[in-house]
Length: 316
Ligand code: SF4
Image 1 (cartoon, helix red, strand yellow):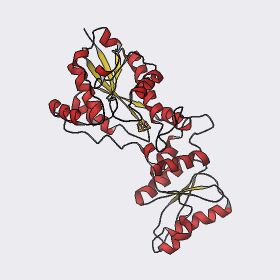
Image 2 (image 1 turned 180 degrees about the horizontal axis):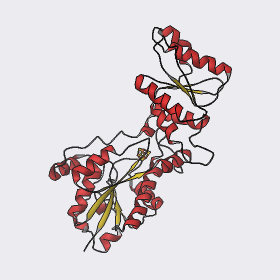
Image 3 (image 1 turned 60 degrees about the vertical axis):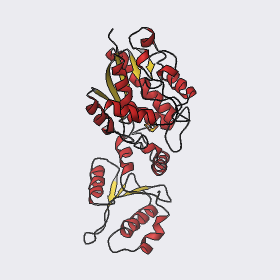
Image 4 (image 1 turned 30 degrees about the horizontal axis):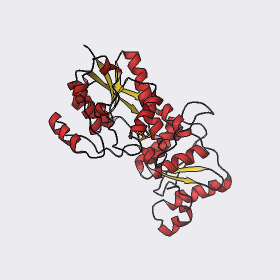
């Protein structure tokens, strides 16, 4: 009996194992991953290529930003709305499942692996929030969970699914060897929203410039992308300054300014080697004075003492 699954893949080991286990249980599997300025699809692309499965990449910026602005289940340790983000990814995968005619969505979640996000209750919460009741398969822990519709219908051989639980990685490591999976990144890392410093910069942007092109409008992708660039300052009258850290960043800030009415740059004098500062909106005379001072303080030939008065404006 034909059975088609759409499996969320991050590139980590568990999501790769889930695909191999499903294939062994008789399913045809394609992969889906999500991308945004906070996390990219590079690891998932490498994994899908190594596994030989087709990968669907879904742009997730609007979705994840709406959760950062209003996370129904709150944040993790930084600005990461993980429970809602994960549930929404599964919901989007479910929409794709219906659109493309798959039978189920699957993930590499393991019951009890993460005390907060993968305990039995969280797995149920995610399933409920995703709207995929009965069509969400966790092949690595399936035998510890209620049978799903494709299992009940006999399309997916439940006997070939697994019963892994807990934090030990022993069984996953053994399975990786069995399936010949040798290349997998560590499970942690890769999402900027989990980083404290990045989270503070994002919060500052949301509070001052905003992250949307207009109130209620689309997310300003470029401004969000710029959070990865330069040193950021917030000045007393509320203006923001992004200061390039090298020639590449300086050029990027100049290009960004050229394409955006209302933005301007401050450059050091021609004879001085120094950074470009991007100012994303009009600033007061007092802030402009400070911004010029910042450019000068980070130009060649200045000392730590020259910079010291301006460090208090630096965000992180
Ligand atoms: S780590 Fe980032 S991408 Fe992953 S669920 Fe949390 S917010 Fe979403």
